[in-house]
Length: 132
Image 1 (tube, one colour):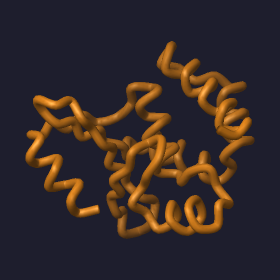
Image 2 (image 1 turned 120 degrees about the vertical axis):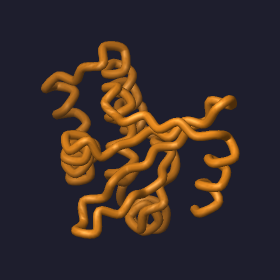
Image 3 (image 1 turned 180 degrees about the horizontal axis):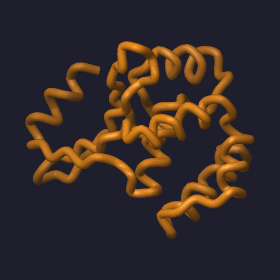
Image 4 (image 1 turned 60 degrees about the horizontal axis):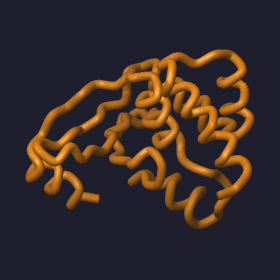
């Protein structure tokens, strides 16, 4: 794991422990993630993150609204996957970013407890995941 990822993980854990974010944490995350973090904060501020939880397994995935005019919804696992174009292009192929803004929005919303909760059956979650 890179030093940047370790620093980010420490900040995320601090935010999760208090469900609050301070200016130093915002600055650090912005330094690490740049414009993607700016987009993530806008998405969270606009209540654009939903946590889809399956019953009875407890498995979950985040659905994050994009910022384009189309307001597309992207399924993502906050720490390692997003179905958006930027994830595949900037994160996986070019390795220019550590993660996309949708992943950051999901992580920030989860850390703050600031997301809409959607309950589905395990079968419904499996169907949703099959669309990725």
